[in-house]
Length: 273
Ligand code: KIV
Image (cartoon, rainbow, N blue to C red):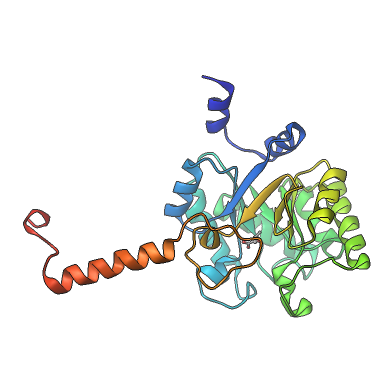
């Protein structure tokens, strides 16, 4: 078996992601929330599967990620880990389950790890949640950071526009990224900031920077599965590349099915007992 083949089946770990960055190998990451899609995505060779709290938007139809509960994230996490053999599975800690105090944060992280069987968790924020992150890390739980546009703070930002265009916010983001590396996070998602700033951070840090709307000078990319598969028609930010148009394909298939039932074409002789 060649190295490339064995790498395609070897389990992805947090350490392996750091090795990939050292080698200059880009990291692929995509969200998933259920068994069937996670199984397809894992078998296609994805490096990291994120059980994102974007489940709130794309699975539950909420306007923001804020309503997501710990029980709901654990349910989605379990569904995904039941399917995944190779990818590293990361589960988001939802809003309100880690910001209160570090004891609450650790209890939330332990529940996710025990009940969902994920291999890491992701938290949004920098210095302001340092204590929570350190307590979780000291329990041996791998933590992925999330900086830039952090959707759980949408009510503070007021809009989903590009973050850190101003010098002061860019400076805080750089400091937060260094802090997350120092305390032991294994990677950081950076969302919707200028590409040059994201590239600067990726070049200063040894842990991988995974971008979403953060340009190409980072160590990997993440997208929300429903967006990149074109299931979601109403969301078209500049950073999104659609790799399929499942909204149209599914609509066509469902309409054909309805038509076949109405006309009596389905089921035919061969499709009955
Ligand atoms: O919840 C999510 O899907 C995320 C990605 C946008 C990175 O955090």
